[in-house]
Image (cartoon, rainbow, N blue to C red; front, side, top):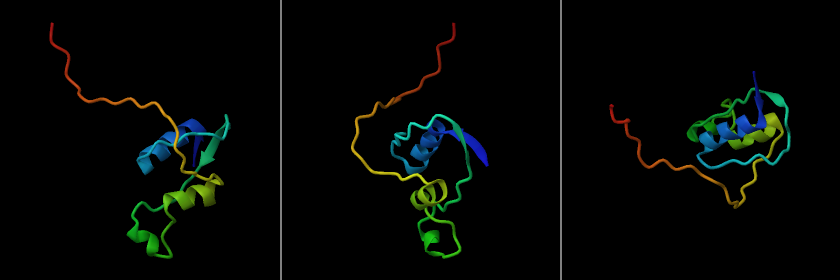
Length: 86
């Protein structure tokens, strides 16, 4: 179990879901997180496999992810170059 603030959890969920996740909980403390889920959609049909990430977040953490259209700021890096040597 890892102790994480909600901001860090939303960052992890954004990477896992490949969409921006915004924290609207207003929870400031760190919370013990032990999220067990299956990434593979086919494995989710196995009754003994952990649930998918959306179900796991709701069932195990008591948080509900709601799809909304919001304006968010993104940082897009289109190119990386090594600095020139002096």
